[in-house]
Length: 411
Length: 78
Image (cartoon, rainbow over all chains, first blue to last red; front, top):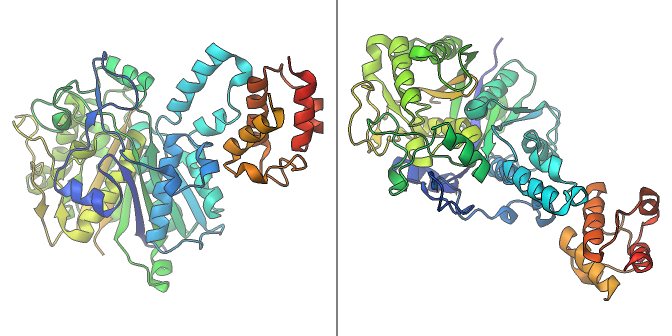
């Protein structure tokens, strides 16, 4: 028998705030987290904007001695996890082999790589930090969360670029549903706003160059979109087996009921033509959930603000939902948070759960001129209230042609 | 240069502890709470601060207490 899986905690570290309430307020009110890059000198670069996490004090969450042993993406993952655990009222109760940690990371410790490479070149081999490797490797996000909480169940990092966070949640869902673990700390984390990452994405022509209007740069599905805005953060959920959550009277935020994952088998960065991979992935998730496509009311889209993603995601949605597509609300919260890469699926699945809990669908901001090829209801600029919102889908797609979709249900 | 004072500063800064609790007799691991990576981090910082060549493993083995490091540094400094 399949066990039910519910969300009992959320922890967010985002460009529009930390914890939960402040973030959600900013998302539903469409307050952009994009501004000029402050993490390094970018004044002569073609891309000078990013969605940075502001005012993050790692020592608020982590013992000072340990902060230095973690790259920023790990600090985000740990902070997000501790917030989620605290809110799930599970603090001090996770020392068990029935608790897993699965955290997705796209790029990992680029800040440390760049810093230590400089040390290697300028000061020599012996001066490279002994912490360099454990600061850099992506699975240390999940590793540290396990070390700090005692969680001794399955401990994984899923590194599937921009879909890593959602794959982590989907896989955790399956492990709980199948009885391998009872609780998972899962989601995504990323902090790679560095010269190397910005140069790499910029030279792929993936990033928006709307440097003079940073807050308007992330404009998914809108006609004048010109690329994504690199962001950073963490989105962590506590997933829990339903009976376990009920037994301890936990507050249940939403239920995860379906997961789809597949590959495009097409190109290293471009989505497959007409979004075929994404289309099939949405179908897999809906089938896994055991609902009909007409039951879905809202899609928290991948919606990166690149020409191709938004066009193909739109086509894919139309191919899956047929006539029902026009009745769907489809929004991209990346319009507010920027694209937080490996963290995105975690953050957006948290938003999807919050939509179901509150009956509020967050807007796609910066929607000024409709793109004739993107002709769905993108919830332009203003949130809407949908009190009977019951089923929502969350999409994440990553370089390499990897896709993840999760179906979330109101409880 | 006051080697002991400088060394205590390095250790305190890395381990985020009050310098006043670091004594010549203090053991890095047992008393000050350093793990093997923190010890290596401190060693590398010592080499840099005092301009020492790489401290050989067999010497590191013997450096259990703060005073052992002070002695080594004094013996090998400039």
